[in-house]
Amino acid sequence: MSVRPPIHRRKGGSVEVVDSKYAVDLATQQSYSENIFLFVPNLIGYSRIILAGLALHYMSYHPKYCTVLYCISCLLDAVDGQAARALGQTSKFGAVLDMVTDRCTTSCLLCYLSSAYPPYALFFQFLISLDFASHYMHMYSSLVTGSRSHKLVTSDVSRILWYYYNDSRTLFMMCAGNEVFFLSLYLMKWVKTPIGFLHPLLSHLTWPEVTAVVSFWVFLAKNIINLVQLWKASKILVGVDLAERAKAREAAGPWSKST
Image (cartoon, rainbow, N blue to C red; front, side, top):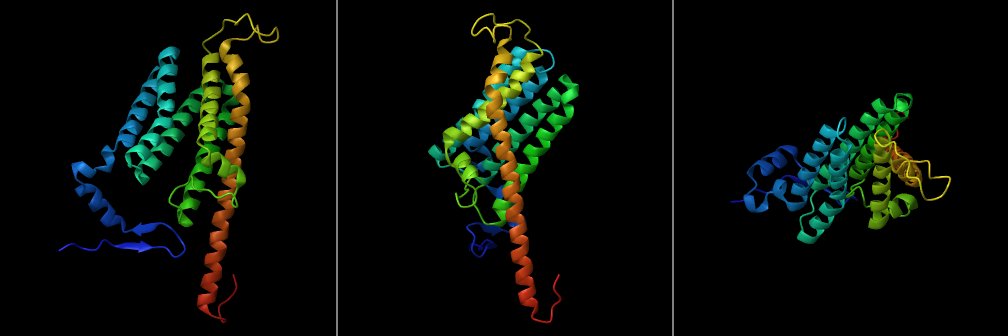
């Protein structure tokens, strides 16, 4: 006799809320044929973590190995989502794994840049904080409003975020350009030979300096989007708070005190 799982649906939402104890038991008992931990996109996610860890290992003394490993880890970010959709293996665990890997990998590189460029350490710390805060608040606001994915942003909430998340090419170019800028700053500490060609204004620059100049504008746009994401998520959470407080006052009746 099967036992009905303790699942509850939020009113007006699209997410079914599962009891946490039941979810843990279900994950423990999953079979090999339906083991979400072993889904192909999640295996790609684990390989990204290993590659990023190796890149961090080489970061302080072998820039070539570090750069190659870091780039492969980042490029695989574009593969896991495609694999998930092609194989029918999309999962909430995979989506969070992907986001956490992105945040941690970039943050580790920014930590190194803080030590490589001490005068700009506060700036890099600000970028880490902005990245984590904007994505965490955006993810949480998506959950409390019943969205199945943090990427499901409608244009009436934010046209900027809608275009950013719903156009895969834009998302890839923004994320890739942002990482290229940080990698360029990293390689600027190692490469000192000017390129000696191109435009006279650029001939005295090294190739990492050139790529830093080109990718700076993508980096700037990406972090403006992070600010927009943080602000919109904050407004959504405040709106949810106001709606819940109004509902609580209504339920308490006319004799409740206004707060």
